[in-house]
Image (cartoon, rainbow, N blue to C red; front, side, top):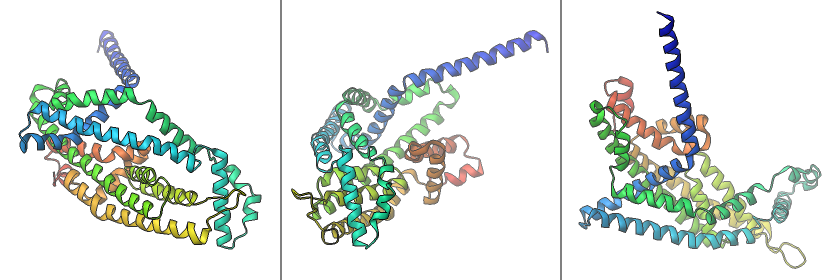
Length: 366
């Protein structure tokens, strides 16, 4: 091996490394656009069954079916925005979620009620200044960012809707863009993989929409029965948290319980609590949490098994391990995207490594 060959090899490796770094830097700089495309792809997968229904059953032309589907989705989105912006602002005022000091005062009042009900010594914990160590700004910051985000996402919304329209109108557009990078000898395999992936993920995301809708309805009914302020906002936020596997339901349960308790902490002009903890706050909170547990049982034993078995076609233990591993590697975002990404990986493995025993084992139901 001559020195020229070695030098050429080093230069080639260096060039490839620089090229990869430049591509990664470029992707990093346009990450917002990638997020828009990813969201539009999810919207497309959700809208796909509607378009197929309109075209096959109602004999709509493709463009008309896409326009009708987009109109339906935009109407739903506008309705949600019109409903939730005033309610979120009202939630911040009534539950003091945008006022650190008032929120801390209500939490301390709730603490006094609980310790009094359980006959515990509240002074010892007060002397320890435990509440001074709690960062009460987290909840106000969350709601403030949520409200400001709702008011400043018009550019992103228009971008997503624009991309979604053309992805729905030309269902092969994204696939054709990827096929440019695929060798001619493997185009058929990749085309079959794409169709299978679109079918499975479309079922999965539509299933998720129904899962959130079922939880939202049950939570709303429970909160309205017990006359909790701003029941719709609390129900929507807690249902949305369920998108985070395993961890989300625990967070939503704690959030719902805390908001239910705080919403009943009403005071008179002299600052005295109107509602007694044992007579009002505790029974209402227990009633709401009973509904919450029922909703979670329905979700765990009915909604999720139907979604996973009919869409991603994976065993519950398999799903559990994948979510845990993705969560360890990539955090909360990893847990959210674990099932879709694993489904894509399974389809590709089955298409290209179908003779492998391990692949055969994990893809036998696909």
